[in-house]
Length: 181
Image (cartoon, rainbow, N blue to C red; front, side):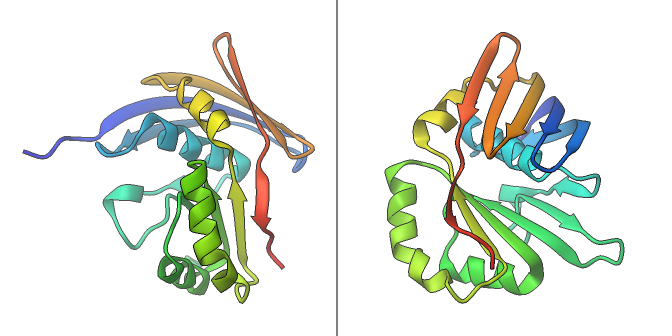
């Protein structure tokens, strides 16, 4: 018998001084049975880094033809496609053909570095692709904030990120491996 997704209720307050975006999002997040707390929290972090009134969490791991997060225009075009982890070159190519902007948030330490060494040179032709890496100790600490009912405060300033929940704080420094043209 298949396991069901675990539902998380998240109040995500975003203060992004770099983009002048200040909003609170109430999210209901389904955590796939194979999804780790680290991946769930990176997904919420990616949402916060790109927060917008039309940004949506998708079915993610449960479907192959959708990203983890996307933003669609009012006419249905995909403005932003956000994928987590280490997608194949084929997935990157397909994503770049479907969306105006594609963001890959890589995490996982040495496995992420090995993945980038393998696919990085093949991504140079995609002007609409950005690849950003989070360090393993930072995402591991972020996973420690996970709980079924979360109130997260995300502050972004000068490219630095602080995530707080209750009395705990995690600082992250995203590193750009590939910037969009």
